[in-house]
Length: 335
Image (cartoon, rainbow, N blue to C red; front, side, top):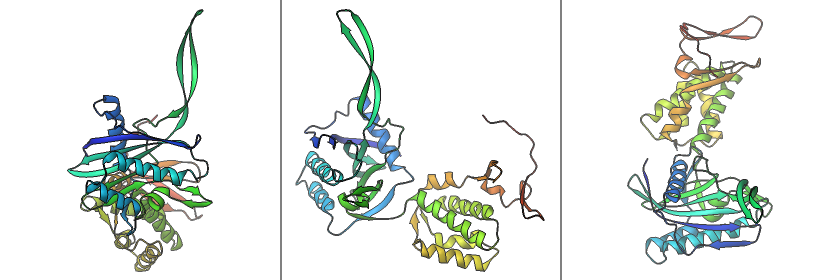
């Protein structure tokens, strides 16, 4: 994924002082530090497995602002300022809110144009300062109240709108606003519908596979490994995953468990195909980590679970379970 940032501007939302500082000038993207900081965060956000896909609701105020921007009726600075003000108006009523810096961007990624917003929650950090006085130089430690996340850190809140089809990708965290738990970005700012994220999809289907296997006396570890393998293989040819089709592969030996899996998938609202990020699906489907009640942890490639030449699960007469690892030529100690 290649990202080019064409325009960017920074707005400051300080809920402690009760003010928002809206910039009237764009960031200078010729500065290497600014370019690197913004590009890295945009790239990480667009690939975040926790991101949701959404569509604007019919009466979305933000979509109306965006339409005016696309038509040239308002400029980039005005669009970003109005959005920052809308975000501030909603977040100032939230409980335990920290100051937030908002960087609005206009970007190009894989030949598509996007308008986006990155929300950086300020953290308290420490730095040094040099004090020069009549009696010499003194180096001191200073508390700083507006430390931004470094480029390698994941953001909790962001949104990007693809201008060609008005599709949305976003992430947000739940906040308490006016005594009600809500996701501010999708519900009150963007005003959009959304689908379950890639990470949530994988977690939920694995949970359902585990539950169905345990309820019918099957090996839940094998069931989850098959689910992960299915997700990874599906990602090689498609960006959409149909959880309804998974049961036949996971529980190939039991029509009853296939039926129960599909029933619980419907109950979870996953009866339609959902987008799953390919790189995340392949990574999540590579290995399966298990932990025993005796405290032993093992990470096993999912392809080995159905191959008794390498891994065998043995049901002991006393009701316990044994795991046999076979055909091992070498053991390496990992630190």
